[in-house]
Image (cartoon, rainbow, N blue to C red):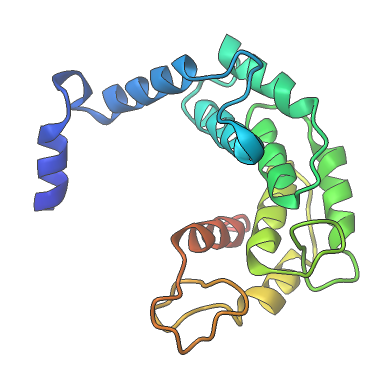
Length: 193
């Protein structure tokens, strides 16, 4: 609580409320978008763009000019990475775009398998399975076996500290929980709540 109060007091005067801080963050995102509608550079541009668009949608800016550029950029891409495709489906769905066809195609990649991998046919892993389930359900598709897929692949990844770790990391490693993976798994597991 003391750290949170100190952080709050250290913010500029214009950002001393959550609403003001959100507005500053939105302004930063809007001012740092690339001319082509994306954010970031290099191979992680799809990730940065989908996450920025999702944040804008959550802040009520899904129909802004900046968001329109990001939507066009994401809609005009074919993703080899399931991670980027799932994030794109999730962000575009949050903006009200009907992504059910993509979500159905993504769901088909998991049929007959324990889950999803980084690419089509890639080795199943907790992270990409969580992203896929969250994206499919964000698009409004119902996955009757989503719980089973997550149970199969996630139940073995919970760590002694109750976080989730990357596949293949021994459970005996006390520092193996991963914040990002845990967040994605919590998001996927919360879809049914």
